[in-house]
Length: 198
Image (cartoon, rainbow, N blue to C red; front, top):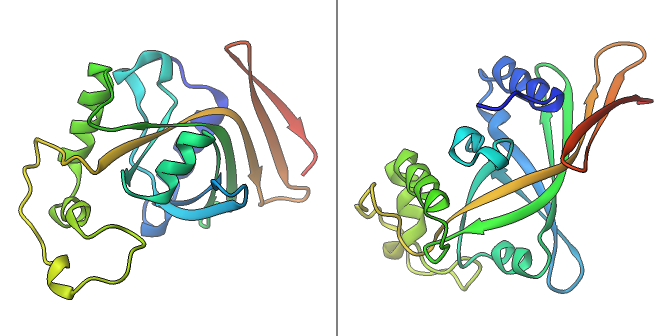
């Protein structure tokens, strides 16, 4: 695996130190809607790409439904910002970058392998939710939400892997007087870190 950047090391440490808190896997993702207005939602972190795609090893993985509004938003404007707070260590990471969607039509075989592995690693109930009725449509009958047995080795068409490729990371440590804040910027393929005022 490529050498970890300073922000990735700090984020990995925060994830590890907050692992006892189930909600530490949740972060808020902001995108721009097709109407030009901001859209924000909570998503679940599914790990890093790491050695699967070496030039994108620091990309963060999430999952989404192909029918969701965010997939449409990302197709029109791929910029997004993740805000992730860790209560145990009192740290906040704001990660700005480009979002991409890996669905069943993505031609890259490595990305497809990553999508299949992510699908396989989901719980049965999480997989089953992708067979539910169309998100954000009128409420369907409860019977439509009954669990379905889905093949853990073959993702259904509506399952998408969503990747966030960071271009800047703002890391704020709320402990201490004064607090510490670090700005990480990807400049011409290299990460540069600066200590900035909180």
